[in-house]
Each structure stands twice: as C-alpha cells, then as structure tokens.
Length: 157
Image: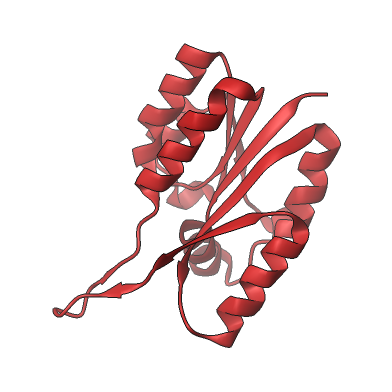
C-alpha cells in the first residue's frame, strides 16, 4: 500500500474556496478519497491560532478526521497588517517526510512551494500532488506538481 503524506495550508484553502465559491472545503471528503488510495501516514493542517469558538470547532473537526493541527499565533502589527504564514514550517515538514513516503499531497495555491516540489520529486523520487482552486493557483506550482487536482464543487460543502 502506498504511503501518503498530506499537508494543508489551511488559510490558503479557506480564503481561496471562500473567495471563489463562497463555500467551505470538505476535509472529510478529501480524507475518505485519499484513504482509498493508500495509507495516510502523516496529515498536517497548518492554521493560525485565534480565540474564537468557530476556529476551535473547526480545529477539533480536523483532529477528529485525523489531521494533526499545527497552530501559529496570529500577529497583529501596529500598522494594522497581520502576519500568520506557515510556508517555512510546511516546507521543513515536507522535507523531513518526503524521503519516507510515496506521495506528498499539498493543499495550497501558493507558488512559493514550487521550488520545494521540484526538489522533492527530483531528489527523492516522490510524487507531489497539489489540490487548490485553479483560478487562485500559481502556474509554477501546477507545473511543479506530478499531478494537479482542481478544487471544485466536488470538494465543497
């Protein structure tokens, strides 16, 4: 059975599905589909920690599905802008796991991950699949993936 590692850029998926479809992503449906393709040995969901009940319910639901939820504090800058980026953390975790799995699945449309996918497919021979909203995904990321899966109505609730 093939070993699968799943990495979710939660903020990216939340905002792209909301802005494009005005709907939420169905993580349970994704999990069921991926479980039928192999053994999910790592499943990390990277989110920003906020003190609101809706976020806590969402994070609890992700854990119930089987995700390890990694949280980073939400930082509000004095100029009003916000910081809450998991790119480096996701990259480190993927680099550590890619050597020991058959497939890395990334849920994000962020083109910064293209270099990472190029490296792991070339150096470790792992398959790199991307799930994202096509209209808000960098072409470089699509091109760097072994296979690209568009998030559409099938994955929404």
